[in-house]
Length: 269
Image (cartoon, rainbow, N blue to C red):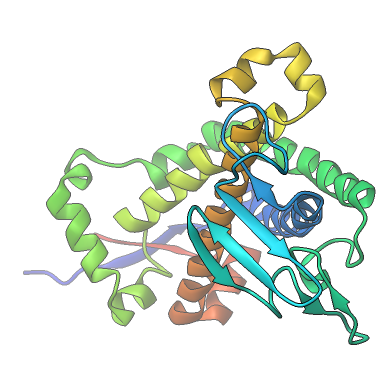
């Protein structure tokens, strides 16, 4: 049986993908940190159209000068020193939900947080739109993310999940076409989480609510949109952490170089 021949016929990451990747990284980081500033104004999440201090919140960060907690449903977790009650760089106790090192700006300012958030949200939205158009034009989605029929089989997905736990497989994935786990992850982020982030953000805007009330109704109300926005942000952070872990395990220098220069896509014939 002849040995496999490995060829490099095109860049692993197209220019549009690389630009979008780094623009996204910057925008999402700033939107996350400025979003935490906005959340600090009212650190409670509700379902439905309305929500106030006297209403039941499914998630809340409570604080006082001496202690703090995170409540998820009926589960209460002490977070003193981490969330809700923490010390700033000068040793003063602060009672904002998220500490200053995790927010933009580092001091509490709802107005400034909104300015940062909305400015980079527009850049993020424009970048996603251009990426989608470019990916359809250069067939990036069809060539790299298309799921073949056999890849949808539960046995194939399970085998890919099992193999993806192997360090050897993770290292090989850096120079090979996307496997099922990678395809499903990127499809979920690009076509579900990122659009959901945009639409839930629009649904929270009073101006959009006045002009497109169906969007708020579709999401179950402005407070439901706010909760979905927060959950989506959490899932994106989780994806980012797993993504960084995979980069570190598969060879960070080569991966970063590939995302800067394009790298090579190897295929076995």
